[in-house]
Image (cartoon, rainbow, N blue to C red; front, side):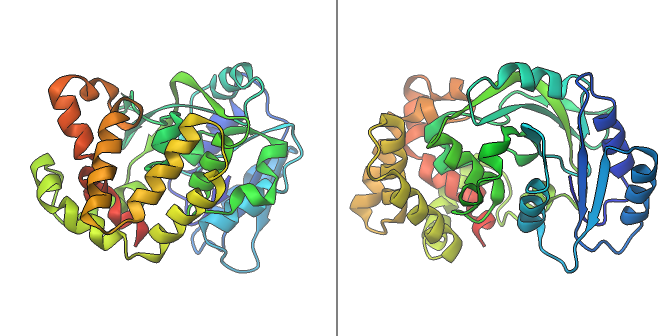
Length: 310
């Protein structure tokens, strides 16, 4: 668990981890120089439970490095990543341990909301379809993974968000599987990354607005260093693959970088042809409207996601 100023919700999350039906061998908590009472709360738990190990960074690392360095401390064969403000359902680890098999990663659905009383399942969370991982990642806080995979330094490098790097490296390695039921309550609150990103959309959430403003967002995104680096990373690591899904990842990344009208048309056609493998929810990829949505998917994607790359 990586923490930073999480005093409001951290007790609930630690308790949910301690109450797992599958006993955990250790809980590693690493704090990134919190200025609230997070550290004192964690030390209290550490004093009561011998298998809790609490660490404080010498200086602020940021969430990517905080998670990476915390994971490197783990000694178990399987490692689960935890946010500080979520709640694990009691069978989370048990279900994922049973499902992971030979895969690198096992993920799950999540419930969303502001409290456990108003939470609702998100049936489209954590899409494990390989082609879609050019456009979106799986949620890091749902991940249970093999220690050999998570403690491989190179799997944390590539794109700018740790869980996106892990997602892609799993695609190119032993793949991932999913428990198709909610195992985590993912809290939406005023300081969460998800809410901050959603609130910074420039033109609201209208689908019509996505088509109107999407091209401008795509062109803006194509000039962003993080987006350029993301696409180049995918291209470099998929060029020689014999897997058809990974070759499609390569082609997506290549065309997403193209600023020509011909490149945009090819990207739209490629998205339309692969709409059943990238559109979410998949049912909207059916029929004529599905083809329409698939063709304009690059504009829709750019409109809703360009802020992530800023």
